[in-house]
Amino acid sequence: MSRRFAGKVAFITGGATGIGRAFAQALGNEGAAVALADVDWEGANQAAAELDGPTTRAIGLPCDVADNRSVQRAVADAVTELGGIDLLINNAARHLKKFNRGFSSLTPEEIRDLFDVNVIGIVTCSLACRSSMRERGGGVILNMASSAAFMPTTPYGVSKLAVRGLTVALANEFAADGIRVNAVAPTLTPTESVLAEFSEQEFESSIKNRQLIQRRAALDDVTNTMLFLCSEDAAFITGETIRVTGGAALSV
Ligand SMILES: NC(=O)c1ccc[n+]([C@@H]2O[C@H](COP(=O)([O-])OP(=O)(O)OC[C@H]3O[C@@H](n4cnc5c(N)ncnc54)[C@H](O)[C@@H]3O)[C@@H](O)[C@H]2O)c1
Image (cartoon, rainbow, N blue to C red; front, side, top):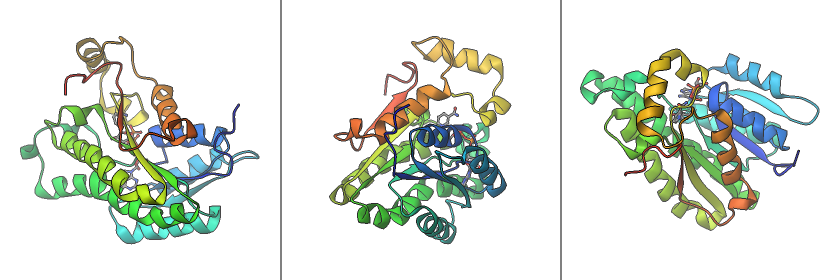
């Protein structure tokens, strides 16, 4: 196993479960120390305990990305406990079906909350991690967009279109500090939360009607692309959103 991330520290929002947790494991396997920052602190602690070992350092931190003070505290704790931050993975989001219906199906509070977490949360976490990355000579920010960002017909899709925009804006703003900013846009990927919400039939119809590659996305499809974008192999790539969709959403 290569150790491309030995000596690096990653701050992963929404790291308690799903893609965040899988990516923490992938980075840990390659030598990174990981801070799992999640509103579900118990889940983050449990995941960290499972990952922590002789070759991987992992800690769980309470963090609500929609709350600036909570983010500042979590980032400060990660810096104190792990020595600094090199990689920020802006992964936490609200993303289930409720947010894939129309704006008129949500209350104003629900709409604001969606954008507070999915969009403002990325701004807050990126600003909070910037100085530590700068002090360490640069870093990488990776945002989780979605195939929905390429057909933004729902509140969720619009929030993920904003993530694509933020990826370009932050790549410009942070370049002087040696910080690259990219995003990954997966299609429907079978994490626990998605499996609980979407039926077998909905998965099959998404594959059949939208994808060129006729199989389900695997977590590895997503985390391998994330590893690439965080690695030195992607040293000349910034401001990009890479689709991991089996060819879905090629039109926009
Ligand atoms: N799984 C998919 O099909 C899919 C497809 C495209 C994009 N994505 C994106 O990938 C990311 C992860 O998806 P997933 O399926 O692993 O999600 P998930 O629901 O399994 O996990 C999300 C994690 O984020 C945490 N979280 C939620 N709100 C938070 C907040 N305010 N502050 C901190 N933590 C918070 C949750 O507690 C949870 O641990 C999301 O950004 C999602 O939009 C997922």
